[in-house]
Length: 68
Image 1: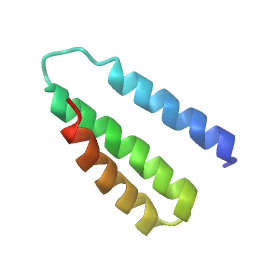
Image 2: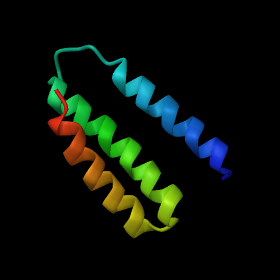
Image 3: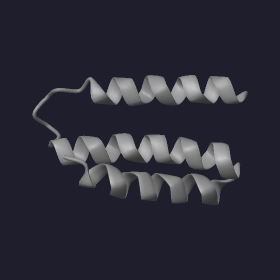
């Protein structure tokens, strides 16, 4: 996949997750999920392997859960 395609896919996923307004997820949970998606995609773009993707997702999820 080209870098532009990856960025567009990540943006679409993040936007669709941000559009969820149901009461099933708290704000902290939703932010953690969005952070994990964005972090995972960024880790993959930077590192290009599974370890970088998982590390980025973990870090993004942690940061996302702390955003109010």
